[in-house]
Image 1 (cartoon, rainbow, N blue to C red):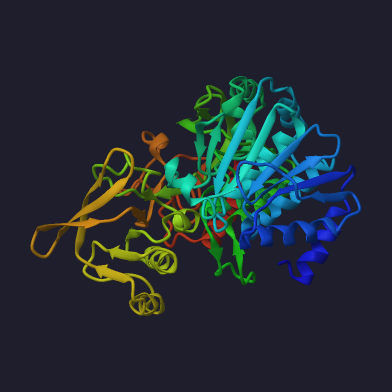
Image 2: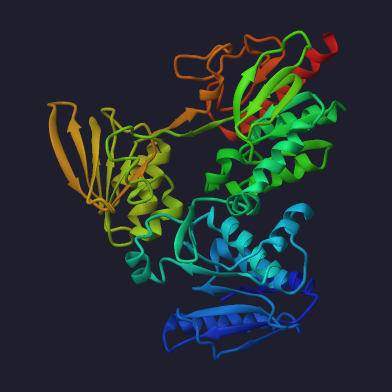
Length: 516
């Protein structure tokens, strides 16, 4: 099940175990149970501190628990934690075995201090790049706090439970049997939902900070590059971000990042943050910018945050990025995560054998339709324009698939459901204004990006599309305020372009500081 190279790597990692750990499997005669037994046997062979039992009595079969030998903590996997979740397995073993998590000490202390009983269940898919962060975060909590338990459930393996609980998007997290959260969350975000004082304490700390020379707003590729270049100049640099990594966290395969033949969004985001942290940069995560106040008599620009705190700086670099564009039709928001989805890699496996649609005929839409065609019963790709806009090689692949229909010149008008899940999509043929209905269970929206600039309307000049207008030096119409990346008018929204723009913005900010 694990190749020789993976097994050798696993053995190296497990050398960091400090205390004994036991794996307790609940199996039957199925092929999946056989695979799980093989996996468990392979894992325990890699360290003398690991042992296995096969007499478990868990509710879900096959599954296995990872239990600290003294019985003080355990976490569970219902399904085979391979693919994106193999790292979750390795980290669960290490943390149960006494290896310290790589999180801030203050955050870990708050986990240990949680009082009460917290029973978490997380539904995941092996192709979901957002699921590991959630699973790993809750597994850390289970390793540190005896009041926390967790089971990670492969939705594709336990389809009956997925149907019963109406799980239509992953990761889907339940706490004590009730919905807790959906989508990517890290440990600090989960703790902010559990410990209501977390946000207030963070706001107090932020409000007490001295003004920065450069404050970067946004933690995506542009923001990370800007922070690194600013810090290397030896000036006081801060980054305030809603989530470090930005939209890269939602990106699956990256094959056009020059010199790196292939990587994945979450991996690149982690590397960006690690690189920034090598410098003296003050990173303030989980903070949403709410208002920009241009410099007044004191010479400092001010950024007010949704938490109530505010930050001041001589120069600002705005790199708040963009988000997925929505269709904006009736029913879309009502059935979000109930059949309307935006990540085919994450949620595609939940629609196995079902009928789906993809909205959008660009590269993202066509790639999504190709991926889904290998999972679902049927895909209908709907494009507003009279022709697809994707690269020719992608169009050729799409047209070769037998379970795909392509509809162009189509205006999506409504998402129809039964109150719990999607049932159909309505669209109008733009050639003759006739309305049509497609019966289906899932709609994947892939129609481009919207800049995150709602908080900037006022003194800052924006384009008709809502993008920040910049010049060749990334300067805005406000002296000392610069911008970079997908949030700006720069053409071509690409990771590598955003990094270059962030670099330019930082150098321009430094030049502004030394000249004024």
